[in-house]
Every structure is written in C-alpha cells, then in structure tokens.
Length: 544
Image 1 (spheres, rainbow, N blue to C red):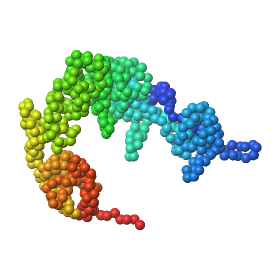
Image 2: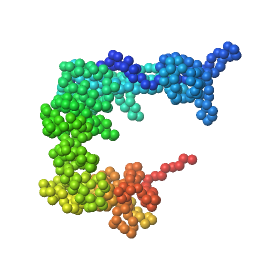
Image 3: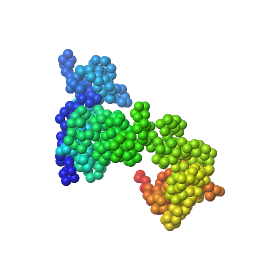
Image 4: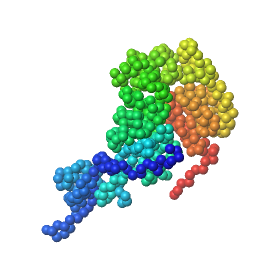
C-alpha cells in the first residue's frame, strides 16, 4: 500500500445517485423577489410590481408591490394567497406550489457564483483493490440572483485502510484566511488523523451496502455496520483503525457494547481538539478474545451489565474501579453520594470508598487549604509527591496521615528544595533583569519573583496555580510579579503576569483568583505606564 498512491486509486467522482440523495435532503427553499413591471392595458402604461421566483417549483409569479416606511424602507410584496405583507427573510408559502419557503430579496445574493444556502456531508464506503476507503463529501447547494439552483459535490475528507496500513485523504486545503478551498481531487497526507467526525446514520449513503463493500477486505468481520447503529453519532475511521490493531474489539460490538466502545472514542475528543484518538482503550485488554476478559471483569459482572442495560459512563466507571472497592452492589450508592468527585481516584489503585471516608474525616483540616471539589485531587497529588520523593509505601499511616494538609506541605517542600536548585541560576538571572521594574505607589508595591520557593508560597497562600509558571518565568517566557501592601511586604496580596512582548498584563489575581480591587486596578495602570517608560516603548503618534 505504501508503494502506491492511494489517492490515484480512489474515485474522484461522487458515487452514482449521490446527487439525488442530497437533493432529497433538501430543507431550505427560497422565494427570491425583486422589483418588476407589468403592462396595464386599461391605463396603457407599465406598473410596478414584485417578481417572485420559487426555487422549489421554479415558477415565477407577480405580486403587489409595497414599500416599508422609513427608516428601513425595505421593498416587499403582498402575498396573493394569504394577504400578508412580506419583507426580506420571512417564512411564507409559494403562491404557486404552496410549499414552505423563505422570502429573500435579490440583494441578499452575491453577484458571482451565487450563495450557499445548504451543505450536506454524505459519507460513503468503498472497496479499493481490497482496501477499505471511507470518504466524506461536501455537497454545496447554491442559489444565485436569478433563482438558479445548483448542487455541487466536492471531495472533503477520508481515509484508506489495508490490513496493516492507513492513509489519510483530503480534498481541500485552508488558505491564508482559514477558508476551505476545494482541490477537486483526493490527495494523501503524511500524518494520519480522523477528520470524518460525528457521523450519524442519516449521513451515510447506502448503509445497507456496507457488508458487501467490506467483503474480501481485512474488515470483512469488523461488524462496522453494527457499530454505526450503536449511537447517534459514530466515528467509522477511528473504529476501523481500532479494528485494524485489535480485531477482537468486534466481540464487544457483538455483545451489545458498541455504545461503550463509541463512548471511549468520543470522550477522547474535546472542544479544542476534535480529532478522536485511541488513548482511552489503553486500560482494556484488547488482545483477549472474550468480552469480559477484554474489560477485565467477571462473566457474572458482564451478565449483570447487559441485563440491567448500564449506560456507557457507568460501565466505564466499573471497569476502572472494580478492583478499588467499587462493586456491582455499591456502585449506584457511591455515584449518588460522591458523584464526579471520585474521578481523580480512578486508575490510582486506591480503595475508593475508604479514601472518600478518609477525605470526609479530613474536612476540617482541608477547609482552608483547598476548595470543596479539589479535596480528592489533593490526596492524589500527595500520593504523586510521595512517589517522586521516593517515600511511597503501602503503610496506610503514610498514605492516609492524621493531618493530610501538613503531610502534603512537607512533601511539597521537599520537592521545592530539589526543584529550586535546578532553576536557581535562571531565577537569579531573570530577577536581575526584571528588578528595574520594582515600583511603589499609593500604599502598594510590586516586585518580580526572586525564587521558585517564593512562587510556591505565593500560590499556597492565595490558593492559585502560580507555582506552575516557575519554569516559564525562569526561562523568560513570561514574567511573574508580586503586589504587596507597603505595611505588609511579606504577605501575598495579588499576583500579576506580564507580557513584555505585547506590553500588557495577562492576568492579575488575588485570593482564590478573585478579581482586582479598584485600588489594585489604579496601581496596575500606573505601573504599566512606568514599565513602558522604563523599557523605552515608543508612544503611538496621534493622527490629526
């Protein structure tokens, strides 16, 4: 497969009948109107009217002309059937065929190529010389000023799979303004990614033909057609990639766990990164054959899951926590009592019920240290520090100390000392560079961070994450400053991050990320002006 350009083998022509399929998906019909004239024989002169063309039936009708009063002064017409006054972008019916349409004045349409009023995203499956191709097309329906309705189908995105390899296909590129420009043919890309996302059954062209398409390919027994029906939206490309690596995943699909498989794929995406991955399958034993062995649970547990029709979230929780004190009998009680707070404990190996009872006993110690929802993460962070410092043990007195906050801070201090030695020179260099920006005004003062320990203490006192900026500050990628009251120079008050590249404040937070006070806002404005003057920033000239 790697010696052949698969883009040359995949058809660039849309499948036969795809255009008709797209036309059946039509949801938008327009009634395009403009000023026209008709001859009035009784008066022997031309009179003004409105000429309407329906994109559903193609009929042209003449309607009574009206004009809206100032200030809008829009042109409209009186509907000959309903008698209502119609102005731009209003839903109505075609006077000729009676279909639902949206009235649009001709000025709403561009003078070239028309305006896209609908897009369709059909997905097709192909057998390409024994390889499986999943192709997504973009159907654009355009209407121009004359009412001409045209459907164009372009290559959009896809993938081709052999038994061992995969290739990404694309039919567009993004230009300088991030607009999609269609190439007019399929091209391969070096990096593989699933761009055929969130596919629903209504977007699949001829789904009944999928088993026939897969015959003779590596995916003949993949049960892809069954997977595509397991949820409202699915990921055929990522599923084929999963099946290519672990063919036994088909056993989960055939045992009614297709929704769970799809949930694992779907939860690997986010608002920022929409490309699905296989990262959530790492905890499963996909080389095993039996479904319960793949999930790592007993046959009885799998039988109970299927009988009670558990949702995907509940299955995933049990799969990852059944060795941590969560059982078939108590899972509902734990979820009801603790909800999403147990999520940080999943995968840690800790006894979840025991840990949650311990956290409840530590509530008094944790009140001033962390917020309510971060308390479970607090003990997980403590265990992680034990591992990094080489202090981790199975001794429950150490894993569950009498005072979690004190033990957490002790381990954190050990880490601070070790980390500070590595960044000490960089911090000193950065401090010498920034100390010229120290400033005092109106009872407040500001100075740059001098050591990493100072940043850690700042974050602990104000309950924010400034300590995570230590390396970036030391490298000069950002600049962290501390605001203090003059009469309390050692007490953290506000923490400021400054961007010297753009000469602006990125953020300025107080206790638990509270907003600036009016006093701090005024101080910040004066300090920024001082920084610009000190740094020699030229002021913009005012244009007369």
